Image 1 (cartoon, rainbow, N blue to C red):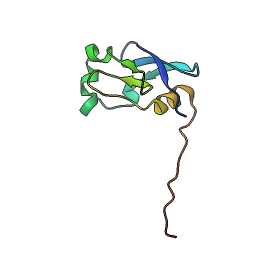
Image 2: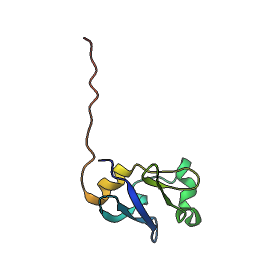
Image 3: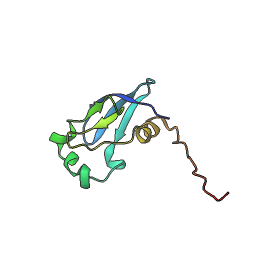
Length: 93
């Protein structure tokens, strides 16, 4: 997929409105995607949650502590387009 996020807006609760480079727009509720543990623990605090920004080089959203999310996962949530499955073939010659 590799669709970059170009805009993010924090909403009520743990919801975000996202816009992707292809124009797809929608909302995601982070409570349904992540556990607020580890690197995401600070994001549970509203003051940190609202500091979410688009990282222009990575094409995804990030927080000041370095927490980020895979834009493909977020795109799939918003559009309903499944993430492609890739197989790694191994074997002997």
